[in-house]
Length: 120
Image (cartoon, rainbow, N blue to C red; front, side, top):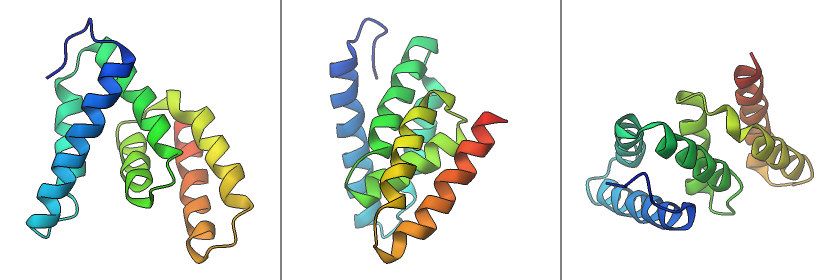
């Protein structure tokens, strides 16, 4: 899908387009996990440089205001052990700690679990 010479900006755009396409396909098939499955498979085909860029993109997605993007990012960071995302997760934890939404407490616990996992 992506060449090692791809810039992070192009890589970010391609990843977002890939996620959106997979998400739309999952919605049409009424399978919300298709996007995650396809993103995991895509990550598995990446070389080291691409994995590093993907980790950066997942960290950015973790800070998204879109809950579905954030959900996917947290699942991928957790499953793929993307330790480069720790600073973004810490930022997200700070943000969630000050939110009063019903889901913020649950999501904050999940973020803390992922940080603990990644820090060993």
